[in-house]
Image 1: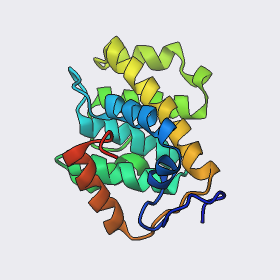
Image 2 (image 1 turned 45 degrees about the vertical axis):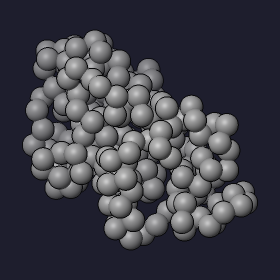
Image 3 (image 1 turned 135 degrees about the horizontal axis):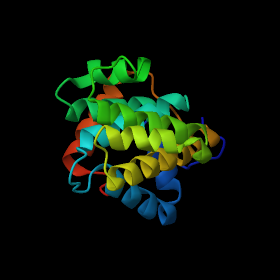
Image 4 (image 1 turned 120 degrees about the vertical axis):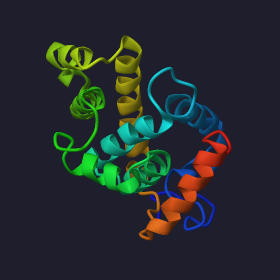
Length: 182
């Protein structure tokens, strides 16, 4: 049960979904930001890779709803599926991803710890692995945004389903319709 009365069945609208329904004035901009960061056309980062960054940061923040939701959504869009997502979340250094994505995930982890944790050395390593300024920018913004989304969900104690099928269904909806569809 959330810390506030959302006026709805939280089991039917778990996690951030219930919070967004509670305050539609903020739902629009929050959904638009997620849509832009995770699904909008991007010259180099796939929606699956961007969802993986969101899932990774959410895992580092120990936000159960966002970790499960974005893990399922990343898995639905990555050829290696949930196996890859779990490997990245368990040990990014050993996960079977390219060096550029690994470097971007390290930057995302630094943002999760604190913005000033992103060092010139991390940026140089990402550039040496082929990261562009746009990829660096978007990785930092995704990581920062998901720190906010994670704190929003956990700060209001939003309902978090335990059944992984709930997240798989949500992922199918997000892949088909996006964040703006609510």
